[in-house]
Length: 313
Image 1 (tube, helix red, strand yellow):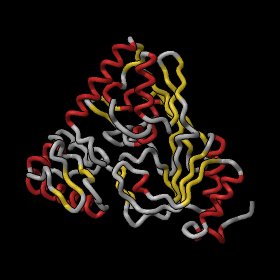
Image 2: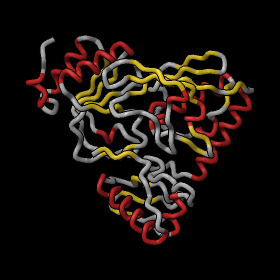
Image 3: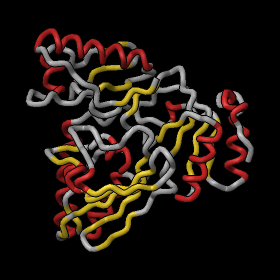
């Protein structure tokens, strides 16, 4: 294939050519012009030129090579559960790994898990085979890749506690493996560097009675159902909890913003760290509530709330 540099401004208008090439080579599923409101749990977001779901690991690397050759900007889309996306759309190509990296392979009390696997699917598997440790993550939506990227956690447990190693594709399209002592996790922030894509993690879990694992999974799920507003589209907790301080939800509640509504967006009256799409919410509606919560909490308590939800603009 020749150099496509002359076509590199065409990602928004000539994207069908790139999609057709990927389809002709049978590298993956291609969706032209999807809207992010159909791809995110917030149900907010405009159009993107192209979504690609590579079929295999080999196809993923070939697709990445094509994107590099065409000069396309790209992002990896997990299950879209922690995203707030601009209504104006984005001039990028989306990569979805749910087909190429969807494996769960057991080796004793270790699991090799693809980045495209859903957290719910992983926990269900653990419940069936009797591997404990992840029960507290029950009810967290999204993919393993997204969970690692944001070091997802709940009830004092974080996914980083169980990772022994991880495999990534680096910016030069090479596979690289990192052991636990080479991985730097922080609160709600994972270890991926700019341009890297997580492919697989190796988890170390504990062998348990499957009945016990299922019982704990159900308990954590019921607690989440009681405490979190699951009936409206949202992106989960909007803010990180301040280090060493009260929870973000507590702070937002205490400044009187529970139930506050702007347009179609509302701060939940059940859990104040959730902003809900209660009908036709826009990116600007949610952003206005985010800024209002930040301002009030800063004025009253002095805490500068940091976003947990990821903004794509």
